[in-house]
Length: 265
Image 1 (cartoon, rainbow, N blue to C red):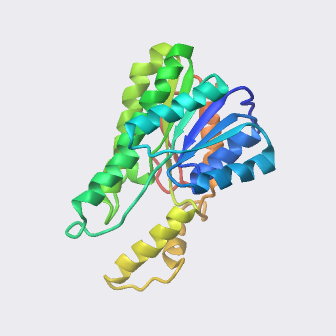
Image 2: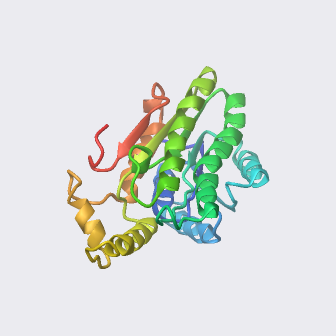
């Protein structure tokens, strides 16, 4: 279903690949003024590809979502370029996988800094513009691990559960200005991040007995999904576009699974 975002400014962090690039493609297709953000220079090439595919106005920026000054600047540039900040999708995220006794404290802190503090910083800065407009939509990327923790990733689970807490708290605080705040929990989505998950989790679980080759762990886990397939970035993008649209104007403080039925709660 196509939605009309013409004249709306949509900011997406973590937009150079995977889920973020899929979300960006959806909003580009639906006519938004698009701001694509990543800490990797690759974001410019991804933006150029979308310009070729869909046309439209796209601003690509490099920024570290853990750096307060850089986050402030990216929203300032967005508002100056397009005149508003209507939707902000906090999607930047990282993961590492390790046993609890080997996991460095620095890894734990980095995961929370990007996945949780980065979400809060972006929400805070985006909301400053939305409050002035008395309208807006904040959409945060959590994870299936925001619902259920998993082996070898306590820091990632903590970071994504934190995103849900931020979402619910801000939904209360920002409601008087007609700003909705929601989150979504992707399951197994085909992307470069999942390639990493499949490889490293496979190595870790192989060390405990059963041997996993490339793609075998993902294939095994997909069998536990009622819809019997991994998700695609466009599956996530459809939900995000709905949450950003006027059709979702009475939905706030909610966290929605997009995982083929893997977690039903």
